[in-house]
Length: 284
Image (cartoon, rainbow, N blue to C red; front, side, top):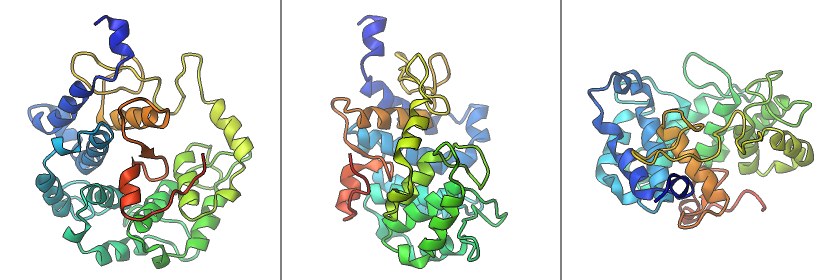
């Protein structure tokens, strides 16, 4: 196979091996420096494997046991955080193992992170506000079918305060447009896509594409590493499991052959979202 043919083919076996190898590099300093991303990596890797039709390549029992041991944190013994709480729920939904945790405690934790005055969500006890956390809270409670636990109206109002003149959304009111996926995704879940200026936002998104096909602020055009698997943010960079997932998810949305369909709102395999009885929150 030529280098051009390799670049145009999704090297599934190598991607699977790359994801499986992530927890075996304990001699690497980077492994210990990224301990706070351990649970995140499980979500990114497991979801990528599922889209590649290889979800069973990670042992289900080991995955569920690890997630439960993390509580609401990014790794065993780490402080709880809203982002990691969502990742934990997403993993357990994929593995059909929500019965392994006390979902009422999860709901109470997510609820406790909302500011009753502004509707915004803080990530943890240090109270950083970010629309990414709004998405985490709304997505998490939607997967648990308990959006009634928060003030959805206030949450929407805060997100709309972060809408900018260019149609995009910022992390906080007045911040540059960047948190578009999180804001649009959250609005989609709570049936409020009508609040998005689709034409204006569409132009903003179109303008993110560069001459080489990539998107600034997002992963560039898919570029496999033909030796070790994994996908990087742009050609020539080191591969990582985050960009591996979103590269594969992007290909799924584009209809790349032999991939499972991804739900673009929850960033989960579409069959998983359908299995738990959630309707599509968007129109193609």
